[in-house]
Image (cartoon, rainbow, N blue to C red):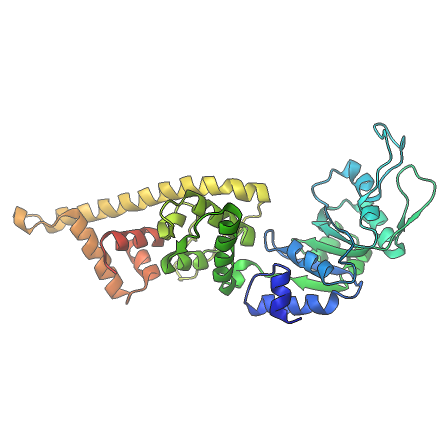
Length: 368
């Protein structure tokens, strides 16, 4: 099987060298039972690579079980992992298998492993090393055959140094390490992912596939995407759902994206906030309201500045000499584009408006 066939079969979308290298590593280590530790920010697709490791292994016909270590309360985590017997504790009205036993013969994916309590880490390490465990309330051990894959968005070495994660468990899990870079560091994948998610939305919702303009694609590729692939998908789904003309342009995304802060040295240095998937979804609404307000402020400032310029420059002139406000605005945009040799980013900065506002004005005045 070629790399591209492997990527397509396992839903690994991207053409960057980083993604290709990761696919090669997964293909190489998947057939073994070696433990794998996956690093990456929230939303980069850690579970996709974990599933690919399972699907390409000899365990593919057996269960692939995902456990979010941070989502299960500490008081019941041990029961969830190892199961319990009837009457083992108050409320245990029946026996229950844990994730270890459910994953027997297959793969257990421990997501957000850094969130696991230290007390549970001790029992987890023993279970991984011996491939056996004792359910709560049981009198005998249960043997299993499980492959372990773990993932985290934290620096586990730092967690070890600060005594929040066991060093022996860390070294046991990191036999092979995969580092999935954030979307902002592999921007060539944004175009591929965009077309993939549009196609997928079309297939899942039985609608006519919308066309995305080059300008809109440019805006998406220049965005920092703190929520990574998950945020890109949610943004595209929202834009398509709200679209009525079958065409995704800059205006389709202007209310859904938060603009990067531009510093005086010209570098874009976004502030990245850690968000849960629920927070990332909810943030779309906040972003829409925020961006509408921001664009109104941008336009208000532009109008006030130009009105002041009109008052200053037109004192003593006749009415025939005074240009309409929209003509002044159009002329200002034309001059900015000429001065920056067509660079919309530089022109927007020169005009002190957002790049998306500039795109809308260019379309309004038919300047390109």
